[in-house]
Amino acid sequence: MKRIKQISAIFIIALLVITLLPIKTNAKTLNDMYSDLASLKAKKQKSDSEKSLTTAEINKVKQNIQNTNNQISQAQSDIVQANKDITKLEKEIDDKKEQLKQVVLYMQLTESENVMLDYVLESEDTTERMLRQGYAEQISSYNQQVVEESNKLINELNEKKVLLANKQSELETKKVTLNQDLESLGTQLSAITETSLDINDEITALQDSIAYYEKICTDKNKDVSSCSSMPAASGWAYPLAKGYVTSNFGWRVIWGSSQFHNGIDFGGNSEGTAVYPAAGGKVAGVLYKRSCGGNQVYIHHTVNGKNYTTAYLHLLTINVSVGTIVNTSTVIGTVGGGAGTRAWETCSTGAHLHFSLASGHYLGGGYSSYATFTANQINPRQIFPNLPAEGSGKYFYR
Image (tube, rainbow, N blue to C red; front, side, top):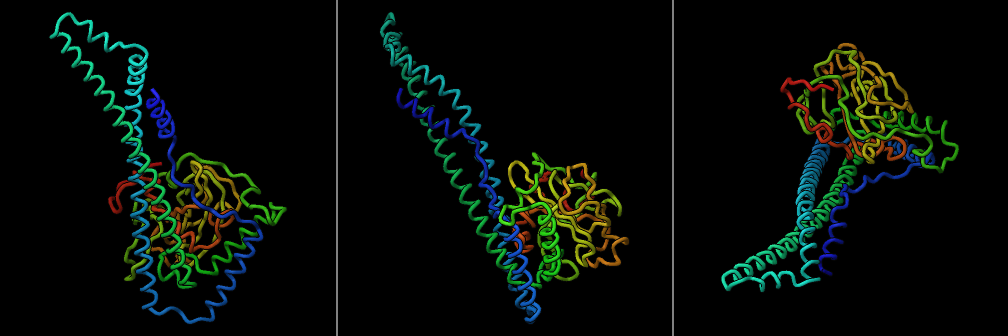
């Protein structure tokens, strides 16, 4: 009976909800943001005075980034698989839980009274006694098997939880490595990524964010994320009413150069088509008429308790400003990237929306470095697993 109570206690622990490790985000105060801005300006001054990286140096960093990205992707895949294994084990343990109830009842009965012994001894002849004894042994053997299988499943579950924690830790380490590689590029980041902010854009975006929080935060040492409320979300929605995938997240050759495409491109819409947030949240950054990326909007989200930032690039128009609270029905801007933006945009050859996703809050409440945003980026297919294949021409619908 004591053993059964121990098993029941283990089950209570084993059936607790299992979640990924929380995303680490550093609390940011206005004073922290002032410090970040000063660091960016110092970095710009240093970069301006130094020679540009050589082709060999850029290629070396490219290879390091590609290797790190591959390792991050593998770690993310392992985490997804570990979660699937945990879900399967939870189901199996749940099934065993019902069987254990019967085992508990049986052991309580047999320990309080010699029911099985009486059952065997009350047989009328030797043949029946042997038959009943065989039944009793089978029941005891089955009960022992259930207990052993349950313990085995619990051990497997605990091992999977450890694996998941290790993979999450590994992923965070790889992101730090990637961030260091990206930071080392200084103003040369555009040589690696197709759409990126140069250091001047970073300074502009951070200054705008600081100006917003200066209006609403009276205490410069207070976490800026606590100065205003932001709606929480429980899921994701496509940023367009419809569309198809023209380019996936990852490495690709464009204009004869290998570059990392840090998002997914959605085509199938003309310029002027409405663009929506992928989840409710708050606008964190707005940039206008950048030569590579055009008009851009960055939005903070908290989805199922985790912090994210989404980015929407190549916009024809922008309908929001820093601090705007949005939901999935808010039109934050319109699709650009074609003739309507060609006067100032050089990195787009046709109308489409570039959509990016990263963990943590970029610009206020999390981190201020665009390199960190790049290092924290996630393949949008993780939140949109049913997206059609690249180049298939098959539409998705909101």
